[in-house]
Image (cartoon, rainbow, N blue to C red):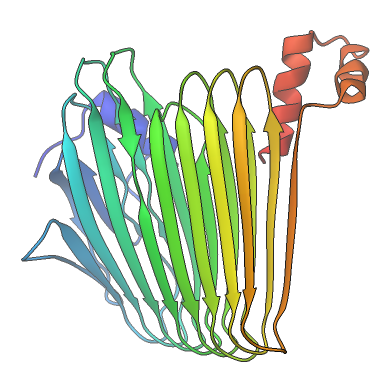
Length: 308
């Protein structure tokens, strides 16, 4: 088990808001090695034997407990793929905090690909927070390609907060979800790219049970010469309700492609999509500048408020 250095501790603060060892269960990973693990009476964490990754088992009835599983890379040239499976029992209410931070000061690319699968039991509630962050002045890229799969039983509920607002050169985020009757999924994505960065977000949500619902909202800002592709798809296969929303600010020479997709396979499916891409409104800038802010300061204020 390795000990975290100061750079790795800083990355932990950025991606998981950890200033000290958290209460509850946790698994810390640094430069492809275990850096700390703790379990509780209700939450167990086991290393996989066939591939790199862990199984997180949460007992029926577990409430007001948390799991932190952040990953940090601080060496140039690391490329890893990690497989983490979450087995959430019935009638639970838990917080799961993941995320990856990469500090690359070298010339080789550093890459973390994480595959997370969630199996959520009946009547359980899960809040999942995943933050991505990059830093370092090296020429090597910081690459993150997360894959998330969610399988929800009857009347389960999941809220996902997906955040990437700094330093990641390339990312392909793929999220797939399948919901049974009465299950509810809420996704809030916040994304900012700059420089020559590229980001793709793909959401594929299947509403398979009566009374299931999904609300997928993406807010993004593309600055400099960066490129974003937002691909949001909801399939209504029952008496269900689904909503997707892409709301983006484009700046400088940035480019954004929004690809909405709704597929209704039941006459009882109610599906809605909203999309908007535009620059910062001039009257917003003017109003803030009359209060004494420079144009750049006004832009930052507007962007910070937009991505909250």
